[in-house]
Image 1 (tube, rainbow, N blue to C red):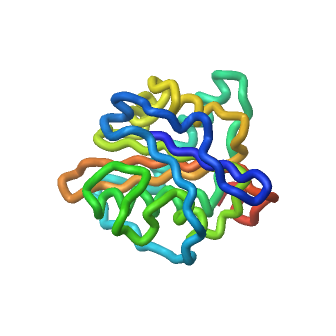
Image 2 (cartoon, rainbow, N blue to C red):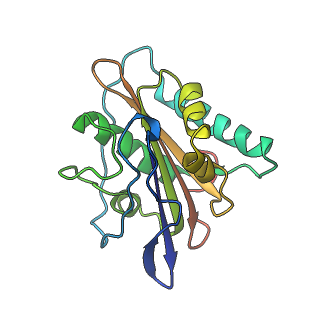
Image 3 (cartoon, rainbow, N blue to C red):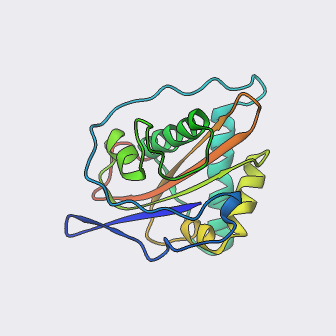
Length: 193
């Protein structure tokens, strides 16, 4: 799934990329948000099967996305700790809700905007790819790269940094999230963490 936000003149507008995409990573159509700010907060990562190393999978997701960018002649995106947290928030929430969606009513951070506010990420632009059911970071990346809109998010020149998250349901089903962004100004969360 794909969702993208942009800030222009202090207002949030939905991106042109947020259009209907049939068969989007096995779930419903892409969602966009334009909500008022929510109060920042935190979340605790869900327990994962012993065989899944969240840090390693998230790192592999970053490597694979940047390899796709380099293969297209684009610069790599910097890893951002705040965007890593926003991505993990969404992966955890999707597991808790048992559904893959950009907007999760009833969850503490129901929209991309709310998640970015929770981690105090001041955005100029942001986008989110989500998927579920793939068995590895490689499969998730391949699914996104095979989708024109998800591919556009990964290869967008609007973004300068990103974060990733993964969570597993009790049945072992994996939920993957990428959140890309461009801050209003360089953030202290940028760089390798």
